[in-house]
Image (cartoon, rainbow, N blue to C red; front, side):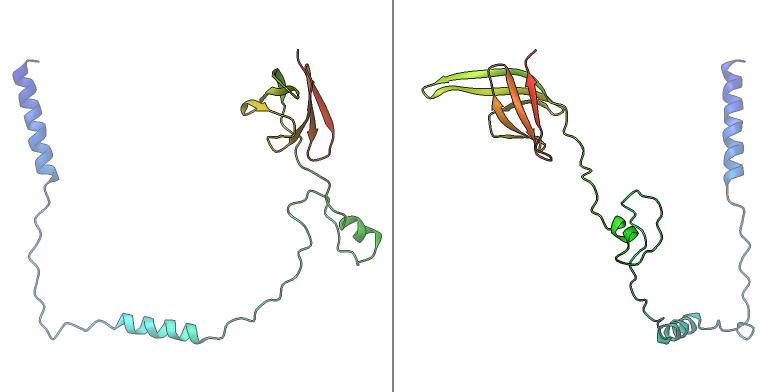
Length: 171
């Protein structure tokens, strides 16, 4: 094909598309005589009356609150409703166990020591999930541990939830 045939085919396609997409002619509206026109019913007025009647209807009686039979936040077998004071009721009323997660993993990266007149003051450099932590004795770490003691080669951390002591040593 030559460039002339491309132009001819493309032009014919554009003209055909333009003719196909043009709107068909609309017939002229026929005027109806006024006598044959019927008034439309007032839909809005009847709808308002219908809504007013619905609002006047009495509301259903209010339900009283009942305690649910299960706790969706506690995993346990389905239990039947027991009378208060029985062994099964006492078992279900026990407080939940401490389910807080264990503290994050913390490792000792280094210990810095400053010579002061009252003795050496040590600072521990710890690596945790949030990055590097620089702490001194008595400070809390990540809301899970408290630094109890810093030695020249080790750090003792006390868990805040149960008081257990964890010793981290330099490698």
